[in-house]
Length: 379
Figure (cartoon, rainbow, N blue to C red):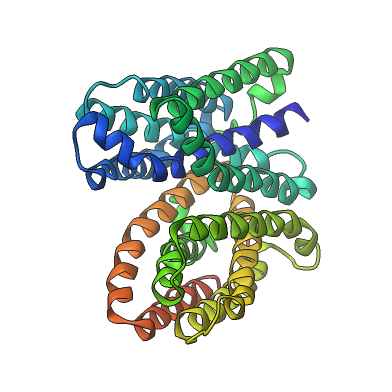
């Protein structure tokens, strides 16, 4: 039970770190002497570092054990976060964010892989639990970070995050000493062949980049669309994103129950992608006269995403247990690269009008549906 809680907290910390910067851009820029838009490089540096190093750390966790990667990564995450809260220049802050991204690569995908280790019957529940931690961290951190910054300084949220990471690392070390078999989790001989040769792996990884990465890129423009079409103020958009995040957590919780009716997470994710394709296209095309008429499609979009994301990761985790760490890490890499690429494309599509956004949504989600076509799994 303690391990389950710690994996939840690992995901929560990484999720919090990924979105906490939003409301802090202006105060960071003001104190470090750079424009707020330049501070967004903190986000880019983090994401690129995570995407590049994650497969290497995932492979190491397959061969040497999950905790041999996760424990030092958690310590490094804490140190880099505290260091970010103490920097005196933008350039040093950029370097600490790169280090934070490297550390996160040894935390989140390894937490998902570790959740899938053990009794297969409970794997979906554990993966959904970790996903819930990630989602809760993402939806709560902007508000908590802004509050701490208001009460003290923009530095405080980073220092608090780092101290929490050290506390989780200490608990992991204690659990490892008490339960030796936890330390050996995920340890396998070096596998032969490429992970992309595993039946179903290539399609699932493409779905991570197109369906999840692309979906996040499209979803990030929901607030801008509502502001432009409905005149919603920024604070209302923030509250809406929070409410949709809660709906996504509900989807995370529902996923294991729904997974019991299908053979794997693959058809569950495909169903979620169909819903996402339809409601996202409707959302951007429908000339709504009031916000209430858009509440249902937005709620369905958030719910489908909350169900589909852990379902897809559960499917990836079962493809090859001996290479699970590598697969989960590649999945995170593809998702982050997808967010970076498709967010930029979505920005251009948004400027071209609603039809371009709807077409992009259908292409991204449709491509992910095709990538997840049925395959014959070994055994």
